[in-house]
Amino acid sequence: MANNSPISTNRLDKFIANNIKISRRDVRLMLAQGRVMVDGNKAQNIDQLINRFSHITLDDKVLQSNAAIYIMLHKPTGVVSATKDSQHQTVIDLIEHPAKDELHIVGRLDLNTSGLVLLTNDSRWSEALTSPVHKVEKHYQVTLENKLTPKYIDAFAKGMYFEYEGITTAPAHLLIESEKTAHVVLTEGKYHQIKRMFGRFQNPVVGLHRSQVGDIVLDSQLAPRQWRELKQDEVNSVQLS
Image 1 (tube, rainbow, N blue to C red):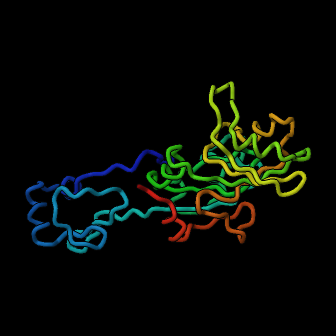
Image 2 (image 1 turned 120 degrees about the vertical axis):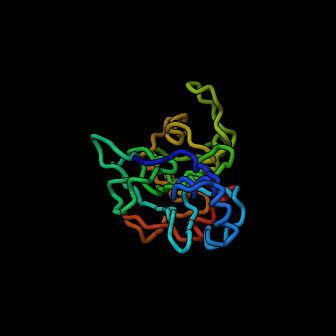
Image 3 (image 1 turned 90 degrees about the vertical axis):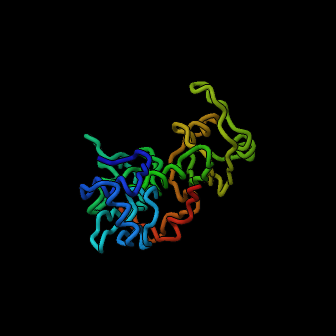
């Protein structure tokens, strides 16, 4: 089962005391003797905060070593953005990774939408990408049934009122690329938002593909159904503060 709860922190002394069944007083002595390392650095403060990705050793014995995992997947249409589904293949089914059961999805795509899906076991990282507060840009290539006109650009930029939710969408950028294709940039993700916005013009979306989330661009070398782990600069492009 994927863990998508926020990354909790713990005091170093409490963690060690519980891990090897000793008193916190004994932990204090170990730290004073320089026997405890956290992420390659000698630990000195008993109240130092750690999380489940902190690498902790005592006398070179590993007490905790959990790796953060960051994956990009080229999702095809017909695959659901879920960890389990009784009817359809899921994005998790496409990934062959020993820790794939720890992963959760960073911003879902509809069944008939293709493109970039991110997965991780680092909830703080995924929260930074999905929280409305951070206004992370999501880029989409859209193919329409009917021709586009310049009036679409202004309507998307002004936002549209969705009566069902009682909200007005945030300004969205629309670039017309050809008669029936557009590049759309959103900073939010309302239910079927792009399809509903084009629906105001009675112009059905016949193809929808996400190409980018924040600064992370879908790798052009990845065919549909393929995945790879993110490079460190891609991981670091997400601002956690």
